[in-house]
Amino acid sequence: MRLVVLDDDEPITDFMATVARECGWEAETATDELAFRALVRAMPPDAILLDLQLGETDGVAQLHFLHSVNYTGAIVLMSGFDSRVLASAQHIGESLGLRIAALIEKPARWAEIRDVIMAIERSFGSKPTGTAEAAPHAVQARADLISAQDVGEAIDAGQMELHLQPIVAAAGHGVTSAEALIRWRDPVRGLLPPGRFVSVAETDDRVIDQMTMWAVQTGAAQYRRLAQLGSAIRIFVNISGRNLQSLDLPDGSPAGTYGRARPRHRPGDHRKRRDGRSGRDRISVDSAAAKGVLGRAG
Image (cartoon, rainbow, N blue to C red; front, side, top):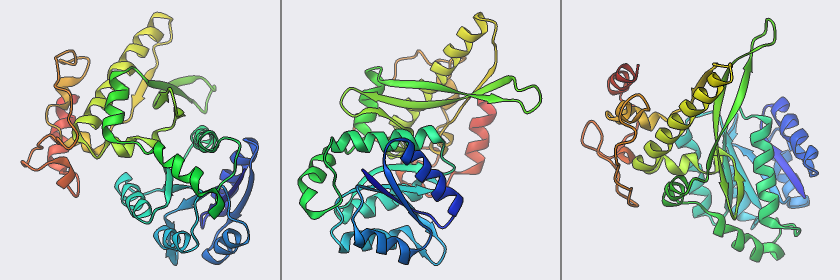
């Protein structure tokens, strides 16, 4: 399997390529548009890691280029911007008929990159893609596309996992806390990193709230188990900016009324937010509402 990484930050391209090589892939890197396009034209890779912010150009321009050369391999979009930027680029890529296999928010951890690369490899099996001849495999791989409803059903089915990433103190090298990282163990797709499904969940207010409440409850349960074992360290759980518009979010925490029955979400049924609009209509987080939510949560 062959990977091409495009990012204008050379240390990042080297890091991504190193992870891929440790997974048994061949990897080549480019830090500018011309070098990237030359690599793709010379031999279309099985997968591409594509940064959206590239100095004089951007990732969207490269998506149009890949469409023009009939590229059929897997594309992983990366960005240090808001997840909505990634979601927008994903929509553009898919509208061009490209296979957007995953989204990665930077900075990305080694394990996250590895999980994405291995998921791509599983989706292709033993046969490479990236060329016109491999189009049937690319079409088959599009069955891997994930909907918000899929994410909600996976939470209900108990397929989500919360992995703890230890945070070590510089002095003494002891574990002082941990970051809770969500993963989806799908029976067909395998173990999926958050880049594959969190941005999808954020398109449906009910699903992202459901995911956050599950993560908070699970993190609290893990804390209690660690405390019983004599290791009561703090556990940090990430929440989405979408959650900060939900005024009833604190009521769903373990200290509140998490156990209260909640209606199952329906596709396209977006909870009305503070201003009466659905979360999908929001362009930016209302800072006053966010402060209110965080104040009540605290």
